Image: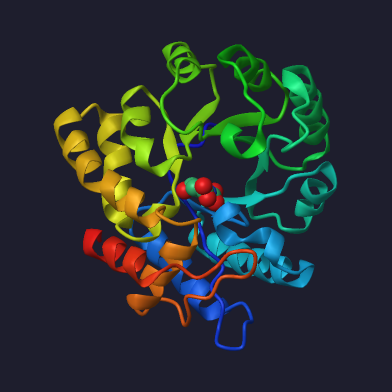
Length: 284
Ligand SMILES: O=C(O)C1=N[C@H](C(=O)O)C[C@H](O)C1
């Protein structure tokens, strides 16, 4: 299985009482799939999973498993430990799990490899490694990503290194077979696709879904003229949506567009400022 195309890591909308707005979440999932997303991601960073109760997380996955099942769309679910990954067997609709490189400890490349060996063995579904070194504190060389790609049940990486660095160029110059390299750094998605990435997991694609899907498709088809033009339009939108901690601006924009009942985020996130919201709305 090689995951390709656009995946949207869904926000978790809240209603006026602070509860998860399940109706709005269902509408968002259907909107992005109608807009050309290949699939959705539940409980990615954008979904504020660490601020949700266990019951909230189950409600979110129950709902998205039903929607993705009805629409035969892939569903990726965030799970950062073997125990949480194991519990995904409850939802047969889950296609893969997105699992972050262990943060903060900086266990070294060998430690990361040992971690994913265990997690992938425990997981009932294939594992996507979420590599985001400016958040985890753990760098991975292209060689280490190739060693991860060789593990049983590891099928890809969400690559979010804060730009296009030498290891990214090295990795994409000789990508591992049957291994998805998905961009997770919205403002850099166009250059990453130009280098050969298979797709992206992009919070920005809640808005302008069709254009992000077209961007991925155009680079995949080798239509550089269309892809460059879309990339130039979409990078400033992503930059505006990420002007404050994700998903605060995104939620404010979706609320202003009438797509979610409130712009509420849970602590420690704070609501986006009016200035950032307005600037992002102007880019939509
Ligand atoms: O939730 C995700 O998955 C993503 N999170 C990233 C972030 O919050 O930095 C951005 C990316 O769009 C996907």
